[in-house]
Image 1 (spheres, helix red, strand yellow):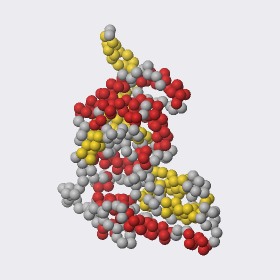
Image 2: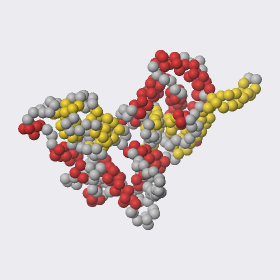
Image 3: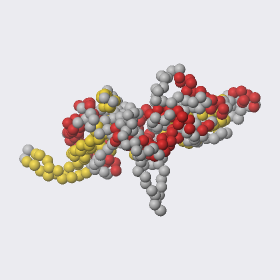
Image 4: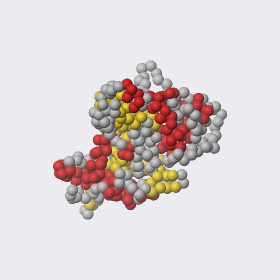
Length: 440
């Protein structure tokens, strides 16, 4: 019989393993090309894996919630249907034992091409496999090889998964002696959430207890790490966007008819944001120790709220090379992909500056948290009609104008009030001077 091996795909350069969150098929099921076989999750994105071939699912080697190294065979599909003959099956079908062996052998293969592990990272004990991610966490958290070997894993063959070592670290932190009041000399300034003391909350009778999902846990850790890493400062500015409102009202139907895209206010704000970043490139940076990396490309991250109340931030690559139509198309496509779980790891990596739209929820103003490793994030609020003072050649008058708040949170380690304030004021000037006679 002809067999086809399904392997755990590599979902990005830094991804070494993924967790199977759901199987859509079982052994014996018939599948056609592009049928979804399973859903996997990494630290960056959830993805559905389609079948590249037609046939019958012959064997599934790993179950839901198991974490598997990339390149490992996770299932086998029989291209001939039910197959013919036990002898041929024995000789050609990978067994579950072989799949386990492949997992165990993988680190040995990698050793030839990867640099030697640092002294802080425990080496794998012979006969027991530890994924690169688990070993990295162990090295960063000071987990010795003896401690690592003592952890009873929840994966295949009691293999230690990410959740196992994080749970061990959490329990170890909770039982640590209280007398250690000064930080260890090897402790990093931006310790992850698992290292920090936790406030104990108790549930009372009638309270609803909801377990955090995987994405919510990642968001929580990311937010805490950002606050621990950067010195957050937020500047706010109210701007008059009447020209933009009047222009969009006049042009939106023609735009949709011509380009097949719905034109919201956000692409206009993104266009003016890109223009302002070009004027103040220091806003488009990252911090690496004592170095400031000013990014060449402008990859605009867009915060997208999902139906399950989670949040994800895909980004528009090379936004400075796109016109308004290109920004609108990319924005709509990314938002649609995010809400249908179709984003790729590339869509949510490499961002250099993020914009979040509080106005979607009819909120006026807020203080967003920086999306690490970026150094600034812009929030745009709801557009509201307000009385405002206008200067005219004949004196000041009060008129009804469309007003909106901008909030810029920036990393005070490298961005001072002068740069942050100047950036925000310049962006406001661009928005207020928008050409109401602009054509598309």
